[in-house]
Amino acid sequence: MADHLRIRNELNLLFLSILYFLYGKRYSVSKVLRKLRRTKMRLFDAMCTIFTFWLVSLNLILIIICYPGILNPGPVITGLYANVRGFVPFSGLNETVLPLSSTKLQDFQSYVYSTEPGLVVLNETWLSSDHSDNEILPEQFYKVFRLDRSDKTHPYDPLNPRKYRKKGGGVMIAVKSNLDIESKTVGKRVKAEILSVELKCGNDIFCVTTCYRVGTLHDENFLEVEKHLRSIARVKKYKKHYFFGDLNLRNVSWPNGTSNQGVEQKFVDLFDELGMQQMIDVPTHEQGNTLDLCFVSNASFIKNILVLSKNDVCSSDHYGITFDLTSRAKSKVSKRKIFDFKRANWDDLNRDLNSENWDRYISSRDPNEGWHYFKNVLNSLMEKHIPTITIKDRGRPPWFDSETLNLCKKEKSTDCDSALIPLL
Image 1 (spheres, one colour):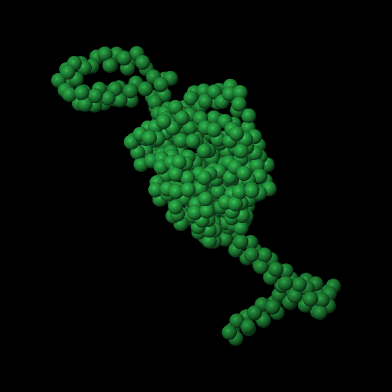
Image 2 (tube, rainbow, N blue to C red; image 1 turned 90 degrees about the horizontal axis):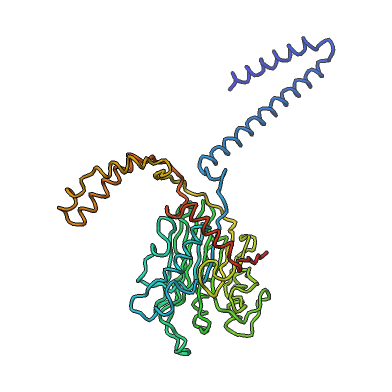
C-alpha cells in the first residue's frame, strides 16, 4: 500500500513539474495546482462517462441476446368472433351422429383462410364428440380449444323443460399455429358453456374467454359463470382479459348497461365489479338486438372493432365481429417446395407416361398395389419433368392459392349487404 502511495505522489510531482515548466512563467504555483485539480477532475468525469456508456451498452446487448423479439415483436394479433348458429343443420340435431353442413363449413373456412385471423372465437358450434378439430380447422393451421355441450356444461333446466335442448350450444377458441404463441386452457370448470384460454407472447401473458348462455337460464347459470370469471380475475399475471360471447342479454341497453331483468342486470354488475368494459353498442343480430358482446379489462387493449354484416362469415342470424388486439406475435416462418406447373415439360411427361407398360404391373395386382405403383411412377416423372420452387407457407391449405383468394374477394365485393359497421 505504501509503495502505491509513493508511486502516486511521485507521478503527481512529475506532472506538476511539467505543468510548472510549461506555464510557470505565466501562472503562479497555486494556479498550476488548481489547473492540475481541474485536469484530474475532467479525466475522472471522462472515465466515468465512458464506463457508464460501456455498462449500458453491455446490458442492452445482453437483453437483445436473451430476448431477440424485442427488436421486432411482430404484427398485432387480429381476431374474429362469430356466433355461427351451428355447423350442424338444425334438422340434423335429432340424429344419432350429427352431420356437418358442408356448405356452411366451406363458407366459414373460406373466410378464415382469406382473412387469416390470429384468433378465432366461436359460439353455438353445435359440435359433439362425433366431430374432430381437423374437420373445422386443420391442426397444421390452427390450434383448437373446444367445449362442446354436455350434461355438465348445460344441465337440465326444470323451469323450462320445453326450452331445454340437449344438443347444440358449444364454444370454441382457435389460435393460429404459425404464430409464436403458447396457449392452454385455464379457469375453474363449472356447469356452464364457458371456456378460457391463456395466451403467452413472450412476456405478454393474457386470457381470452368465451361463453354462450341460453336466454332462458336463471341464477344457477349466472353463479356458475361468475365462479369461472372470478377464478380468472384472481390470476395476477393476467394484465389483459378479453371476453367474447352471446349471453342473450337482449333487454340490456348499451352503452348504459341497464336492464329491467334481474339476472341480466346481475351479469352487467358482475363485469362492472371485475373492471371490464363492454365495447359493442350496435346490433349484432338480424332482429336489431345487441347479443354478441366484447368485454375488455381496459379499452385500450383492443382496436379496430368492426361488426360485419349478415352472412359475411357464414350463414347465421348473428353478425360476425373482427378486432385487433394490442398484443403482438411473430409468425413462425416455414417454407415448402411446390411444383411450378407453368414451366412443366408436358410433352416429355406425356411421352414417358405413354411408354410405361401399365398392363404389366397393374392388371396382375390388387387395386391398392396398383394405385401405389401408379402414384410412385407419376411422382417420379413429375419430379423429372416439372421444376420446383420454394415458397413461404402462409398458414393456409395449399389449395387456397391466390386465384381462390381473389375469387373469395370478388364474391364478397359483389355482396350488396357487405357494409361494415365501425366501432370507435
